[in-house]
Image 1: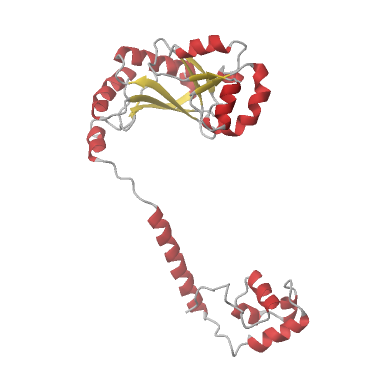
Image 2 (image 1 turned 45 degrees about the vertical axis):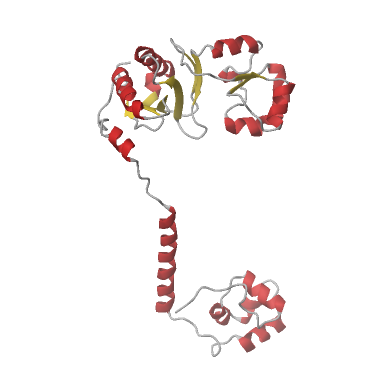
Length: 290
C-alpha cells in the first residue's frame, strides 16, 4: 500500500541539488520514473547530466509503483484520518442543568410581547449571577448606526474619557480604563495613530456616533445620565447588540426603554429581535405592534 512521503528524507541517495529540485517539485519516485527526460530537465535545477544519475537509481526495477487500487485505498484512508481530526475539534456544546431548566420555561415557537418577555426574563434571571439585559436585533440591512434617546436611565455606569495627553499615554501603555472616548475635531489627527488599538475595541471616536464634538464636556454629562445610548451594526453582520442595564430595574422602565429602542432603530428595518440576560435562553419578541 502507498505510504505518506517523507519529503525530508526522500532522494537522500542523489546529489544534494538534484534531491532538492525533486523535493521542491513534489515528485514521488514513481512519478519521476514516468517522466520523460525532457520533462525532468524542465524542472528547475535539473541538468542533462543529472537525468542520467536519476535514471541509474530510480527506474522501473528499483521502485515499486503502487497499483490504482492501492492508491485509491491510501486516499480513502488518508481522507478518513483527516475527517477524524476535524471531528475531534468539533465538540458539541452541552448546556448545564440550570440552563436547561430555564429553557423549558421559554416557548421557542412563540413571539412574546416586550412586557411579557421582561416579566419572564426577570423570573429566569433570579437563578443567574449576571443580570445584564441584552437586546439582540437582526436588521434588514448592514451599516445601521445612530443614537437612542431612552425615556429612562439604563442604570449602567459608563466610563467616559475625554481625549488628552494623559489619555493618550494610557492608550500607548495599553491601560485603557474607559468605555467611551470623546474628542474635539481638532484632536482627530492626534488620535489617528491609535486607530489600530481603538478601532477593534469600538472606541475610536466618530462624528456619526456623536463622540467627536466641539463640546466634549457637555456631551459627557449627557451620556453619563444613562438615557442616551449609541448603537451600530457589527462590522461584518447586520446585527445590533444593546446592553440595557440590569433586569433588577423596574419592569415598566425596562419595557419602555426596549420599546423606544426598537421604534428608534425603526421596526421596518428589523427582521427579528431577541431579549435575554447573560447566561439565560433568549426570548423572541413580537415587534409588529410596537
